[in-house]
Image (cartoon, rainbow, N blue to C red; front, side, top):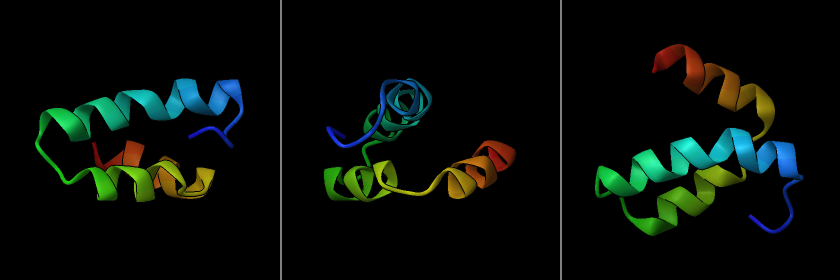
Length: 47
C-alpha cells in the first residue's frame, strides 16, 4: 500500500481491515489494495 496516496489509503483501509477480520488470505487483500478507484466504487455499491 506504500504506492497509494494518503487519501487512497484512508478509503481502502476499512476494506482491508474488513477482509482481514473475515479471514481472507492476505494475498487477496494485497491484490484488492491495488484495485483502481473505479473498482472500489463498485465494491462500495456491493457492500
